[in-house]
Length: 458
Image (cartoon, rainbow, N blue to C red; front, side, top):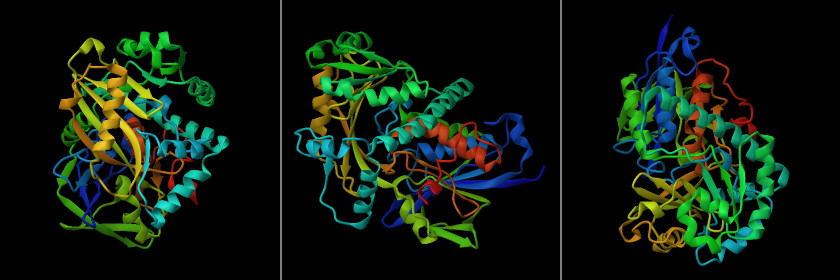
């Protein structure tokens, strides 16, 4: 068998440059088992060292490829993957665009604790993306997009379970489900469109009254008069994405993956219908295969190649609160439908994350957003955590207008994308990485992938 080297590069942007990090991969009984070993090992460069880039590198390495990851930061998962909401929620994998959303959005903008914030921007990218969101706000598109997202998310959860069994990786994980909490009867009635899709796709769920919600999450007892009902997804999980990514990167190194930090990426060098090299702060880097796992910075990198990737940075916030009364704290994840905020138990901490701010690439921490997060967790769980000691964070979620990430090949034969996961990067990381590793290895993925790639926007 001929062996070639695959380098996976993960890129992010800093001061107009792109940065990457790279791991080395070697052949083992990888994601597709011994059947994968017929193919030649390749050199792969993965651009970007978040959870998407690291999982991609890991699965490529297990498939027998030689991988390098390029990252601009000093380590992995230091940006969008660092302090996300902590939920792994396949059943809650829903597109933001849906029936009634334009009307709801107008209401949200004027709420004291607004789940949606729009900073005045008239740039073409923002306008184009918002119009694309509006085009997806029909019931038919919502159901199609949700079903597609759940297909990948359910597969990803299964891959994570298998990875955990194979490696014993620990990351403050729990497998106790997700509770979508409704404060009004109108929200309870509105959940019907979701339960139809869940039932059609065979996803387990429970529709609960207030007492059922408290039985699932005893810490909510003090908020009983504010609960109209809930939708529980018992097979969902939780976990610390940063811890997971850091430990998986160590496991990838053991497979030969090379991580190169502090590397800025200036562009891609093409020859005909292929990418020949990465132009970077450390010179030109060549490989057989290139993977763009760049999150919100994908469009700027690939635009010179004539690739239009509809990914936009939607800003989210979180606080991490130390638990002071464990018996009153969340058991797993509660999604507050009114404020679009998730409250998740991570060991001896509570992660509270959410909101959507349309502000381009701005990463300013606004105290008003912190107040919203504090309001939700104290309103539901009282003094279970000490919010005065909470850390405050923001990150840019790479959102597509239809909610589904872009996973798969491009018209450049050796350039693949794994980006645009929005708020579900942690949920979909293992599945999208496994799909891409199989595609690159010439193996048919275990799920239907025809509508996951960039071609669906053609």
